[in-house]
Length: 352
Image 1 (cartoon, rainbow, N blue to C red):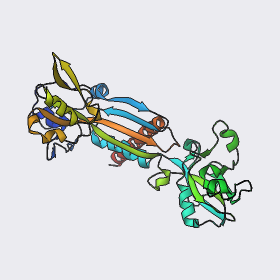
Image 2: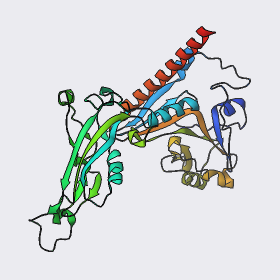
Image 3: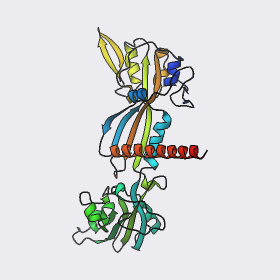
Image 4: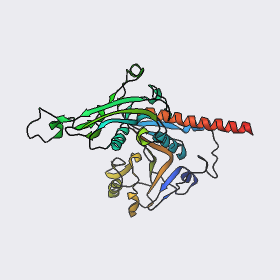
């Protein structure tokens, strides 16, 4: 997005409706309306075809565990609903019960169980059922792992060795030491993607010769709203798209100073007829620090806003579910919620 040089207004209806205004010492026009996408004196009657035309999702960056995408044309209430669903209502599999046979490490049983519970598990939750409190564990609601590690001296270690990793065998217990114990038809069902911890190098405990850990753990399907260990994301955040409006041209040494007021990549310096000129090239990189508003030479020359219905989302998965799949599942959860409300309303109307 390149913001063109143009004159701007401060308090016109369109600006107040569609922008959050960032001033030197305050932020104004922050509140949304009681009815999303409505504004006094403006005809914004709901039009599904117009909504489809304006609503956009654009993926800007996608890696194994992280995704950044733009969601344009919705109200903050809907954007925040997606964020909350991603954190708390997309189910995953996590260690729920730890059965300790032997633990002579310095890590007490309760802390050991807590650490194990926070280890992300790579297993498709859609292939498992939720387990009721008094329900018996079966192959369709439970995953079983064994963890059995004992530390001893390494007979091949050099004399005088001080590094525990070289001096001892199994001086550290890692998440990769968890061994899946398939039950029922799980081995066949998950033959293409065996169940295991997402990461093998998470340190669970440290041992010294003679110490050991021998436990069995059971994983169950759950939601992040019940415990953070079931949350599929490390972070799920959004921010409004920054917008930088320039009134006139900023040239010469002022252009250099103007550029220094923003993070790298937001403003470029171009030379036209031997004169330096500041050009806004990528406002989405701006952190909206308002540094530019502190300088008298830029007074009435620059205006900072945020686009009210343009959300820059960042999803960082813990690794158990790929980020692009998380978004799809979050949409499905929201659709199910809407369907539930619709059925409840219909039932209420039928009883009246």
